[in-house]
Length: 215
Ligand SMILES: O=C(CO)COP(=O)(O)O
Image (cartoon, rainbow, N blue to C red):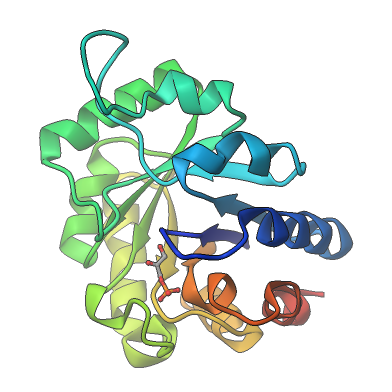
């Protein structure tokens, strides 16, 4: 299972989370990555944790003020990028161009979507993975794998119909090892989570709890 911890714009210490994630990944053998704010990519990558961008712009180098270029996040140490998170939705053409940008910069890609129909459309654009996250469950602590398991199995089926090579992750409300196991049982190959770690009093303990059943 791949665990991607999205720090969003939460006021957590990205280095504390990144160091804990690197240690827990080493100890457990579970692939864990952290997606901090763009301004924190370099310092997070320096901890040795697998580092992801939360977004990259669809642009190439040029007159694009305010852009976060795929090349720049790769230079800062990112191995991959999320795209089209429900808190940062993109137009279809921009998802496509951001995927091209990520490919130029050799970044792995996950395109987020709300539901199985959108997952099928996202998979058709050729990312490495898609992630289904029902917006109404994000940040609630109610795991998608329990509240809406059909959306996970529906996403797995929808992606497989379009491109069997595209991995499917799920997210929203995931915070415990039990949630991770349920997601895996439903066919997901990873989870996206945020508040369960970024807002935890002890992010290291939260990560240890999350991966415990996998060991
Ligand atoms: O949006 C998410 C991950 O990208 C999910 O957020 P929560 O884990 O806080 O529900």
